[in-house]
Amino acid sequence: MTSPVHPESESHPWDINVPNHPARQDSPEYVAARKQMNDVAGQAAGLIYGQGPYEDHHGGALWLQDSQGWFMVRNQAGIEWSAQFCADPVKVDLLRQNAKRLYDLVSPQVKQQLDPGGLLDTPITDAAGVARWTDSIFNAGVPLQPSFHTGVLPGAGAQSPAGAQSPAAPPNAHPAGVHHYPTPTADIQLFKYDDFQLWVTDQQGNPAAVAPVDNRGSGNASVHVLYATPGSQLAQQKQAAESAGAPLILSPDHPLSQQAYQNQQGSAPGGTPGT
Image (cartoon, rainbow, N blue to C red):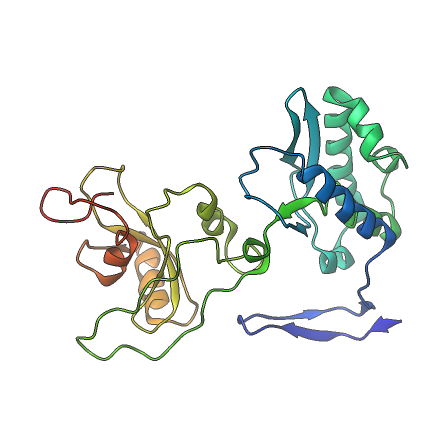
């Protein structure tokens, strides 16, 4: 069974045309890879993604094992399921070769354990080979919590009246998924200080992401706007600043700066929150 050319969309705005392809179903390789990933990830200490339960992200996982247990590195690229239908087997085979070289060099025993069928040693030359790679433990094996995988921040609300207090910032967690927000911004959720509010809410009720502009403790409470909801006034301001060759920097008294530092205790010189 195949699907004709069709649009795909979600409540988080995006819309693409996808060529006709077989209706999606979990292949036996994918089911096995998902179980294998959860078994391995459950034994891995120190994953920055946090504790399970996990969803499997097609992000190019390469699992290794040493005396301390399982750990994960990532290949040069991951292939989402629907992306396989535009994937050039010659280019996908470069990912296989890269993974094979790693396992042959540092962990041949793990290679045999994870790949008893010899996928790593089989050149990818056609669509069937691309499909097997896409659903394998070596591609679909990045363990992400559901919110960090496909989470969407609260949508736009009504614009705040003039003089009204800025909307509250979203809860300080990992609510924004890598499927919906730029990875360089979404990844900040994994390593930022807990008391810094990455995701804030603009005056129109849209989510935005900001970062400090100076070292922690500097007393500089300005912020750099990293992400603004497409179509928002903040996005227009960001685009205008960047078109002029400069980042969009908001002063310490801006509502988004105040949201960003609202969880920090104490004050820097001049009465602004410390960073």
